[in-house]
Picture 1 (cartoon, one colour):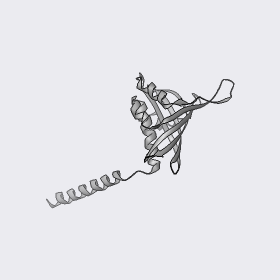
Picture 2 (cartoon, rainbow, N blue to C red):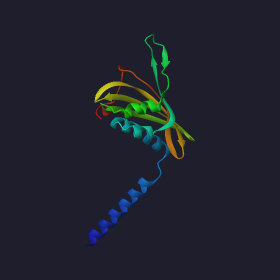
Picture 3 (cartoon, helix red, strand yellow):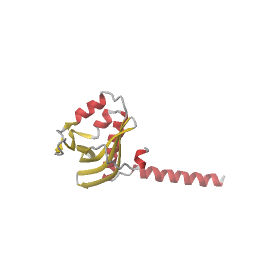
Picture 4 (cartoon, rainbow, N blue to C red):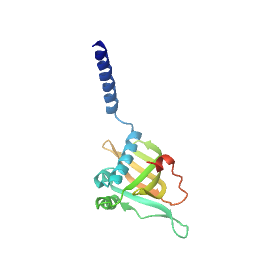
Length: 165
């Protein structure tokens, strides 16, 4: 009986410690990572509302690329509403963007996150590249206001751990 009482006290104490730690405010860096993770989790399952909630209303997406003449180009800005409408229209295939090697820099209410990624459509590799997210912290929440990526189909060095997700 005494052992059961001691075990119960230890279990309650451990749970209380865990509960208190999980309720602690996350650091800004953890919050930025969480926003980006939420974006890709929502995209993967085709949930346009989850995706929309990670962006500001006026956010834009762009791609940096080389045209056929090898000239460096930047695509026209795509409003976030266009992207979320595409997702909300119903994705017939799983869009799985897998990221790694994230680097985050924060100054006051501005954050930048740079990451490598590989894009898979229904499990088939399509392209890889880098993404740069610019985020602003408003009303205590980080939101993406600009996202630019690069894309290539060859020369991708995707880690095995990412390929096997």
